[in-house]
Length: 272
Image (cartoon, rainbow, N blue to C red; front, side, top):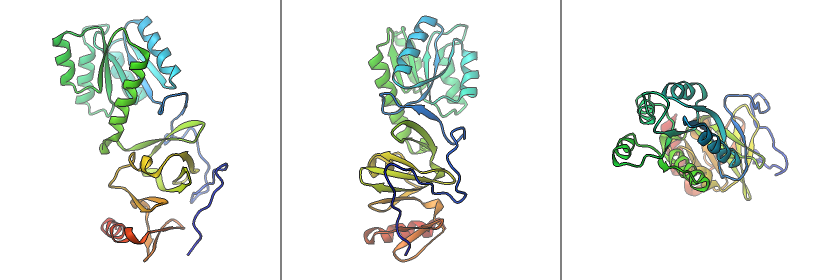
């Protein structure tokens, strides 16, 4: 049996068939600076009042979020959503032009764009609330906006969004200095290292995150990722072969604990 992986917490070690190093410009990754929110997102503002939009930008940037644009109309909103692919849209109901933010929300739904949105509006009458509610928004905030309420709402909406299995196509990792969004199908396996978890990627450098295995497991699709040992979580699609007490991803041998063997090997057999 090959020795299991041991790494310095101060040094990232590559696990790669091609020995490639991480490419920050790669579309597999989006790097964002970590300021004080637990996660940072690319956010589109759809708001036709420039002063309000500028205030929202300041709130978002001070919290570490990236503002990818500011649309003032339905048409600009549609264009920017397709061009920028934001993680979240902050959407005013009243916009410049005949169409409203509710129309834009309906477009997002109809187009099956996988992007949550929060309504921001001074209009709190029953008719607008009912129309907005029918589009199933992530949230509804009334103006004037409070910074703390806005940032908290974003955290809650995005946590709920990424907690749904159909949205677990990527995971946001934090190596201590920056946020890195990684596609889940690019993950080979995870290994616990004391209070850290090292995430091994296909063809890229591994990422060391201060986290528990459970915290990361909750962010991954349950039909693809499986815990084989108290120190290892694997992507079942990356397993090539296995034997009585272990399995192999590439050339790396990963242990399977006695209590998990039956379930693990049944899953692998069904996946082969």
